[in-house]
Length: 269
Image (cartoon, rainbow, N blue to C red; front, top):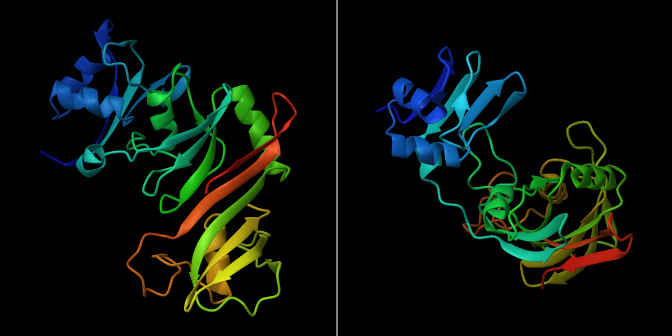
């Protein structure tokens, strides 16, 4: 059997379930198909748009189109365990572990933080990520549970009204920097600002606190590497001298709650 394939099935007959259509047009067993649907790798395209379809017994209409994106390695991946820090009803704060994704892809979303939240929160509710944290990093993330709340948090991030701090263990001697130390090198031709706030130096490494004002992709990793202090365990921008996991943690969030207008602070030890 092909361990990596995609198929696009246009529905021509009425009153047939999604599972039965897939069973005819793919090499997977019905049990495998149910699992693949549950893991977010099957999409339904209809007059209403295109969305993931997880319900095997959903009856499709002529003109609908099913898209299946199957990758055996992805399907067999097991999600890491995320920890709920605070449930604020319309949004929640989570500690995302190393190895868990912030966002899914067309090949599945079962190893993402938002899917973990949807399956484990009580009462159950939809979850929407409003910012990202690298798969290789860990720490605090905000998820919203309504689209209205997602829009409010998106505006808070856009207006830079959410204070974000990170802990990182870096290579080198950082004590010669005058704190707070601003790194303002553009990333992908866009302005980016990171500020080193504290340094705890050991012999050849330092534990630093760093705050970001913008949220460019891999911003902290790129900025620290650019000034000669790569993060320990950074496979992309590091020195290659470490076999550890990326030593980067999102450990502090502060913002005005969109519900109560009170100041909220969350931190990890």
